Amino acid sequence: QSALTQPPSASGSPGQSVTISCTGTSSDVGGYNFVSWYQQHPGKAPQLLIYEVTKRPSGVPDRFSGSKSGNTASLTVSGLQAEDEADYYCNSFGGSNTLVFGGGTKLTVL
Amino acid sequence: EVQLLESGGDLVQPGGSLRLSCAASGFIFSSYSMIWVRQVPGKGLEWVSSISGGGDYIYYTDSVKGRFTVSRDNSKTTLSLQMNNLRVDDTAVYYCAKAQTLGGVRYGMGVWGQGTTVIVSS
Image (cartoon, chains in turn cyan, yellow):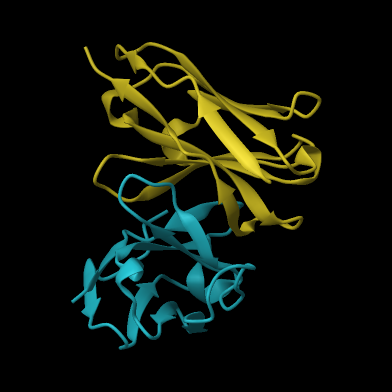
């Protein structure tokens, strides 16, 4: 199972919006609506931001939103804040009861 | 409050064994699938293994099949990962995580432990 493809880095100024892509194949991202996104600050455990492509767990600000088109899923962070600076990982069900992560994107708030 | 607390990480020689544990609290443990994810320092996340709430469905990533065994004791609300024949490339922080919904880990991992560090080196 190959890792999903994410850009290594992304950046934006406070208040702006940034979109992070996550590209897979028809065997994972494109084949199922089971894409989730995680935020990880340095030295901390990952935290769930988005699940089932678009759903937000309670407590996650609505500045975070998810979408999918074909084999590519996206995470959009609107109204960037300093505390959004972190690593972001996508994850997808890969069929045959496997899970696959993206390589991660480091988001810098300028 | 839902909590997961991993333990058991250590320095071990190549070919050695280690058993990781994850103590769960604050939710009906037996109802939720659980997962192990690892992260090489400075690198990305990698799915290692999943186990259903009842322990009857178990899955592994290819690189650990035949070497790692996941199990759970629902009476003690504990998840375990027995790691045998460890290799240098198994060095990582190992996290346990709880499925976000009753539907299983494909729906996302809603709560994570703080991680435990495994170092495989001679």
